[in-house]
Amino acid sequence: LLISSPSPSYPFSSAISSSLLASPSPPATLTAREMTLETCGAKAATCARLRILAEEAESKNENGRGCHAPMNVFEAANCLAFPYGTAEWLIQQQGERELFQSLIEKLETSAPGSELDEAVAKLQDLIMHLNLPEEIVLPVVHLFGTRSRLVVRSSANVEDLKGMSAAGLYESVANVSVMDAVAFRSAVVTVWASLYSRRAVLARRAAGVPQHQACMAVLIQELVSPELSFILHTVNPLEKDKHRLYAEICPGLGETLASAGTRGSPYRMLVNKATGEMTMLSFCNYSTSLVPAMPKNRSFIALREGKTTQQATPQLTPSSLVKSRVMDYTIEPMTHDLGYRVHIAHRLAGVAVALEAELEGPQDVEGVISGDAVWVVQSRPQPVSD
Image (cartoon, rainbow, N blue to C red; front, side, top):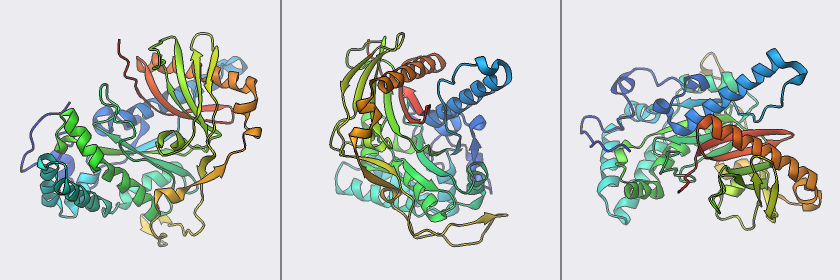
């Protein structure tokens, strides 16, 4: 990993070019075909690759195979990214470069305790007050439109790497409207600020990664409102079995699976990747699921020709963007319909085989199921010991 020392004249990560920071314009928002590992990290680059693969598969089906075309193995949401250096460019524009550098040095040198906690709080507060220029927001509006709901995700240079996945360490915010400027800004800066949480700082220390070398891109994807969400390990981690995948599945949004504070268990299954043979390990018993919530009090902001025509609503917290729904498992197909479970198992096996081939190795996969479509949200290398 990155190990170079900080420079008093260049306090930012070496992943960010000095010419980018010196530019009078903010870094350009990147499309899926422009995202690379170097500009926006492994997560964003992988999601972009998944999107391109899904587009190419759809194009082949439409242009050459007609009614004999096989069903696409998976879908992938369209995406954009604010690349590395966007937050740092804004910090410079606000004249906070020296403060940023001094706080980074405190993160590096302070022992765990009040001094470190104070530095973390000040640095996160600095980032939470950054304003987004319309030059980087307009491409988001143009691609996704005014009615889409989005997921704003982290993509750092210190996550989704072999040996350091950092899964769950950084923030994502679901169900965000780009047309609510304050809510969208809040989601973006929340992701940036999560790079400097106490947990993240201490995790980098443990891994030997200098604090000043960490940087965060922001991945923006269209939200797919799912019936089911899943986490999939293409190699069964329970028995290190390369022939079977292990999946955890829950109704609604995947935040239920990611939250350690959620009481209950998901559906758990093992699936033979070659045959689709399924073994159920447990059935879901969460009392509630999470679904997108449309804020009741909202006034959308209109961006036309680079001008703001209406003020946005007060800041929304991420928790206000989703709501709980009481589960009724008597009408849940995954509980009472064996045929449906077998169908899902076969679809997940196809996804696992395809991703292992395309991404060259075992994968930890997050995705959703909407109708009969399986959407892959992200994929990262799965740590598998010999």
